[in-house]
Length: 529
Image (cartoon, rainbow, N blue to C red; front, side, top):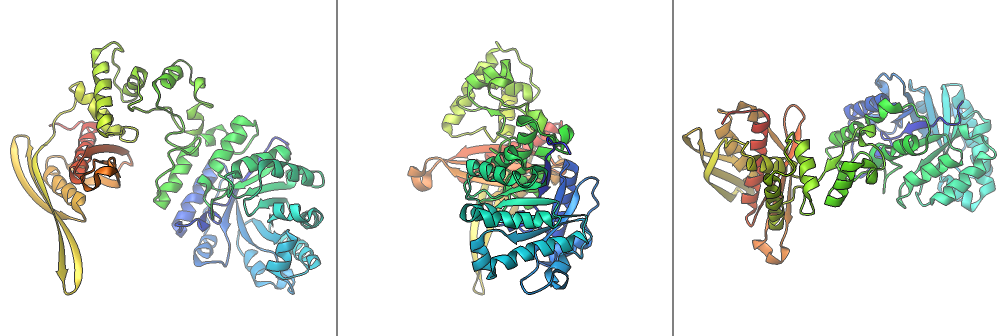
């Protein structure tokens, strides 16, 4: 076995399910497991058989894998029972998973207090459980729970625990920083001490992120000799989360020179895997996540952009495309000419750098951001702003006026809020008056708009608003404050775009963002005005 090969073990489907606000369905688990297999993960932990109906349903019909090995997670035998007569162990070994991961205590304090057994019995529980499981699974590994706390308190006993597992035939002994309280220098020293007695190609690392060091601790363990790394996609997990594989994998491959089965092709799928998970969980992706975030390779300051244009190495530590990401030039009130030109090229506008329209656009941009507009996230609005300045965007419709009424109705003791919007619009020379109700004023306005527009532009029938954010820009003005609204929209093709509107009236700001959203979709479709 090559010392340069690192094995990756994903526990998103179990540890990730312990994240506050995360509740996987069986379909979610299947979709995530397939994606992990496609990514090139070596082990996918499916969950804990017998713990809940979702895990039982998943193990009853697990997805087929092309590379990954499915792992089932459970406990060592209970005190006072033999391994072959323990219901939990029997259920753990009763799945079709070829890999079994058994968690055992390695901290003497936990053994005495949490388990309530003597230290020698705990050693027997570990050794006998591993040996028994070896006869029923292709691979067995021990998750040495609280190992780093145990080693600090009683290194001799913690080592006896992992030796018991190794001698009983465990393929991997995984050292767990269960409380997430260890620091990189501690992890590296302790793993090195273990590697002096157990070969590194049998040692794994499992870190939690309670000190924001889970990734660093995992890499420190690899430096000390560990050759299996456990973690979750996007760092999901209980409390502060687990070690984030979307950071660990590229660090191992691009920074430390290790091989993984992910390979270069799989690495380009990293952003997709990260965002698929967020999509399934209906969570907004972390824009600032290393490697995979939208802002991971974003450049805002004009000086930075100018330097990146000459040589990306000035402000990019890796090539974005290696992990499936891309360079992103952010347009803002800090923007210089280089920002604007680069962003124009991104949207397909090749304009002479000396064209006076570039200066006009930069001036307009800075004036608008002074008013409260933000184009960091509202990229579709920026594109429309630029193209309107160049005279390229048709006026598909004109709203001559709109009115929104909010009402609270009482009926038989029940309160029902009702929003109604009436619009006056002109489309291709025709005048229309349309009224619609909605779930809130913005939804009512959106409904009335689309009810009027869809007969002319049927493609708007598949347009949906997927996110809506409001920020108060001048809180000192109280209810008269300037408000910025950002709307994210999507269509049936899976495309997403964000638009922005600013006004002292939140409904007016919403309309401005909504107008840009509809116009952007029509322009992208090449619709005729």
